[in-house]
Length: 189
Image (tube, rainbow, N blue to C red; front, side, top):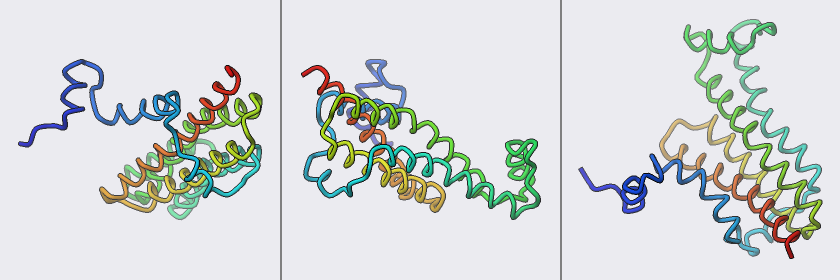
């Protein structure tokens, strides 16, 4: 069997990272703190969006998969509004529900997890007086990445789709971290 990549070997030997996936989780805040986020040229391609409206857009993005899950659940039978989470689990175990139910639920939960850093970044950047265009561009990038994440998560089952989903997730988290880092830089200057 081939040798693991050098980063994996060194990090495991040092006891730093149990898996390369963990490295992906710490990479965005490290890059943002080192001022190595998205370059201005890429951000300049992003559409302008009101930062506060972007917060609403993010709420829509994390609820979109939930609506897909509810639709798929409804197709399998009446929705149990008393205990919908157990209903989704039972549908999957009984093979009455589609695999999309589980994918949509996972995408929804990931969206819920991504919202706090994004909201904190937008609000901190607004409070700190970061250039409005930069806040807008990073917010747009976050929303586009979350849209790509949702589509890749719910619409694919391939290895390539998984890679695309991970790249979208990484971009959305980096945009949020870059907003926070921009606020910190502005406050400390």
